[in-house]
Image (cartoon, rainbow, N blue to C red):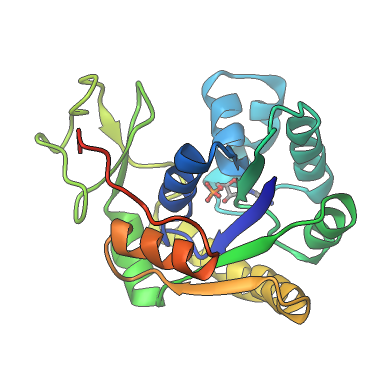
Length: 219
Ligand code: AMP
């Protein structure tokens, strides 16, 4: 059983790296941001509660986040473990996390601010199937259509200069101190997130003593 959290500034590739790791190791990938986006897209009560906060790039209330994470982990569908992405983001959430689950490691993806801005503003999402694109590193054949399902590619509502500034400010003020807390427990594995996704994935596996990543033959 393996229990990891993956942390890093916006655009550092948390979702991409967590997906690759989860697929190979049979971990359940839990993205708090994806859970919230699903609720917003499906117009649920929770979606209505978090939509404005998300659009502004602000953090959702801790109690709400805690209950979403607890509910998701209470499903106990993670026989081989989990990797949680986008959580914890401040000291209150970190305490809840440490008290409730004995984690094996925190993967910290490190990316300088100028690269964050470049990546985030180039990020696109398929409005139909949810596939992630990036106009720099993972270009779609047609800039406005999904290569897989043909759905329209859109920017995330919070991938704007203003929301990004808020998210970066929160990251340095609230999330970075959480890393210090985890560092004291010697949980943190800091990885340079600048290289391409496969290089970053290999670096993560090396640091965590996991089997190397093998690229699927279908690409
Ligand atoms: P992400 O996809 O991780 O960038 O999350 C998108 C948005 O969801 C964030 O900007 C927050 O508004 C909200 N969110 C996700 N995870 C958390 C969290 N752990 N605490 C508070 N808000 C969160």
